[in-house]
Image (cartoon, rainbow, N blue to C red; front, top):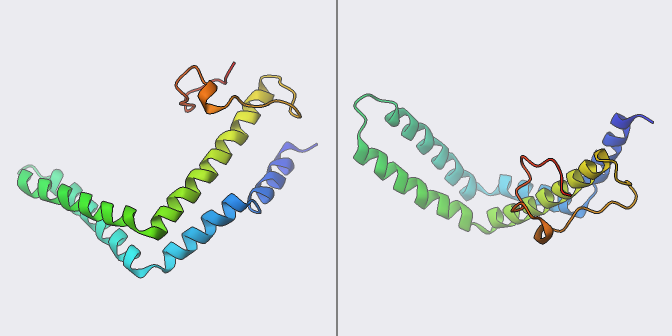
Length: 138
């Protein structure tokens, strides 16, 4: 059995999952949303300008504060967009799926039965639920 081939099979199955398909649909819709893309371009330009100003020896703190406020306003507009909200919700679903799959893999690597192991539900974590530095639940 080739584990890499099985990983590729899992990747293909993931691309057929309704959560992945919803994410792709939301991403494609956002790519077609001209107003949203203009806001994203504007916030990216503002970030570059902010970094440039912040690196100056004689930086203008008032200008930086104004840029920071403008950033917050544009960010709020981006996040209020229904397309962005749909994308964020779909991305959260895919993220949860990937955490669940990775938790199963972790249990398998700890010797659990792949056919029956079940990661604990989030409320069952005794570590606060942050898995980024976790060695696995016990």
